[in-house]
Length: 122
Image (cartoon, rainbow, N blue to C red; front, side, top):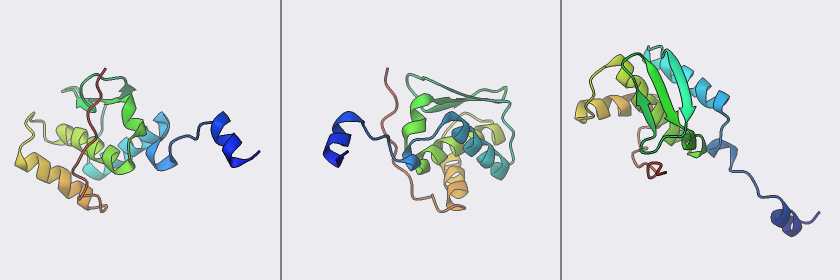
């Protein structure tokens, strides 16, 4: 089958780095949780209408399904952000909180990731 014919019949999936199964995403959350020193009670992936993730006071993390299709570095930023709410349970997102997110990401060379895709809108 020629490349041109293949392109017309089968759409190519997103690059692997930018598309992960739920199980792989949850493994990313677990890995970051160990690094940060927290243990979420439940990790859920579901459609969310206005944000990429949330953290409950009971330790439940919820992430938007569309995060599975974002670049790995952006997924890491959202994961770290939500996990830090477990470690430092105050709701504001001031300079200190953002510095903590950046510091954890810097440990793996991702501190320069600051921009984010538009949040989901449904």
